[in-house]
Length: 104
Length: 469
Image (tube, rainbow over all chains, first blue to last red; front, side):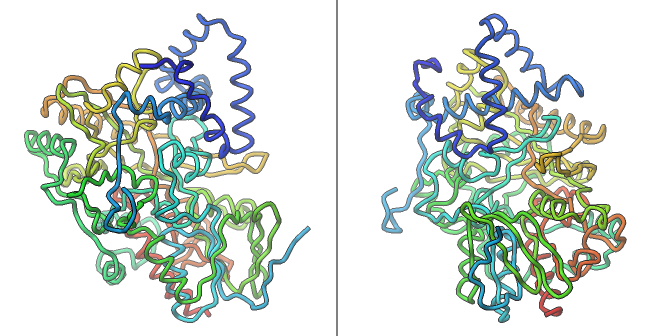
């Protein structure tokens, strides 16, 4: 499968961000700016920690879970909303509408 | 600056929210001759204008640009923001409540008509004009068949789901997963193709892309304040009906300053947390094709335990969110998308959630999972794992991220004004010109799909409203 950067799925970014509430957009922007300064090895460690977050308790787990949902939501929306990637996983769906005088 | 919309006639009712509750009430009131205005925060789509893919439908049809999250991040919530409300994007399941659900409500609320006998006429009336069907067995895709095989081997009961649908043309290759973003052939019997056009034909006025901020209950009328396309707006009517769901109604009333007079406002929030499990098979399953959802568990034991199982599947973005991992290992899993089956378990959670506003006036959703909730979730996921193992799955992936699609409570109904917000007449305690009738009045989680009961209660509520006119 194509890597995230090679897929060029970030071209869809405006479609994802357009409907995000302003306060969520600002939080996401700040998070991405902070992450952009981190070396790859730290990012990898953070990604592994985020995967543990559903099991982590209270005060420590909550912000990690929110970050996990936010990042996964953005990344997977862009990547798995991108037609070339959907073709690789063979996701093709349609609804029959020819009886209604419309192309399916 | 308040801009009063051109309102030359005094309205009888303003209905806030256009889902199955608001639209049903609007229809019943309008056809009885009441002058009504329906306000909806989302846009008006129709069969030909629904977003054409998951990326666009996720961001355009839901509040929060796709998902809202509990304060501690354990639960995500999907709440539709479009004309027709959640009925446009849900799976159109219709189930009557049983005596177990109603008796729980009766004992908690003190409301006498919470019984299957008392509510039956309202369900019957709703069902007269709705096409309710099950998916025929010949159209059970492999995902459904896997569910059935596993259930049969374990000796569990199952039955077809009842859905408000007609003429889906499955025999012509329709893939129903598309209708999670709105049904392009109007087969799903959402409010958009039933009660809303019915109400419009009786004179209902509708304004979309209007977000209500607050309501002011005056002596003889109610003011509704909000924003529409960048401008402040104000409408006035004799009565207002809050039908914008648990989050919508609660935040409107909180912003309006009613917390002090309504100490139970924001309480009793529950959501039937749903946990999906994916299972990988050797052969191609194509769970996304055809009728992606067809059957449910019907074992009395599950009902007693507060567990509900349904076969289901999700489009790629949602599936990616649910599967564990990241990077290349996650990609490898997603590449096998066509080889997955899925079952969801929904738990009947305890109504301990709270809806509040933070210091910026933004909604704050507190939905802790009690020890009992966690026990149910664990039990449900173990049963699903057993079902998949009996069905021959190679590998099973339970998803620990729960989602709440049935948002209930926040304005619970009851006879005691200190522990409830709405009385048996659907009026907000102490505010005779304000009504609430949707799932926000639920005193507890019923453990059954709420849609049909929301419709039935809304029909009953409309009769109360007409009495008061």
